[in-house]
Image (cartoon, rainbow, N blue to C red; front, side, top):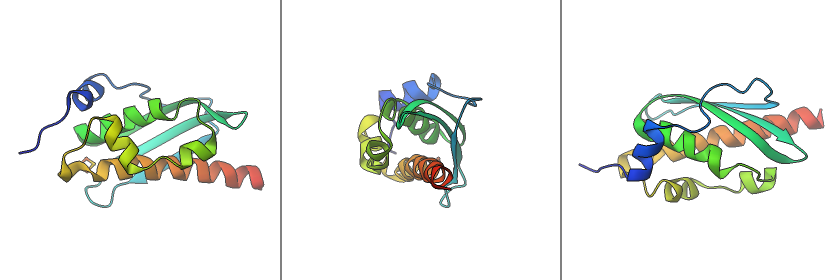
Length: 125
Ligand code: FES
């Protein structure tokens, strides 16, 4: 059986930036079709950069840890930089994911892209 890295366990036990973000101006919700885990990601975008983010995840250890890590990865990034992040970047940031949990990285990337995509639509409208 594959085990979790120390980074995953640390983020799962002590999640960073968990909860709602009342001042959010971008939100992305994603359900993983593989397992049903969900992530609601809230962002506060200021001057084209991600100033703040929070997550609310219903799911396993890996999805909580990757949700927590994505909030650290995106802090201060421009929207283009955040959109360029990949599943591999998330997996690398948590010290590698067990094969059976690789889809948790897809969950957080998809939620992030949805949040930024909806923000851009709203700005364009
Ligand atoms: S069981 Fe699928 S991401 Fe958690």
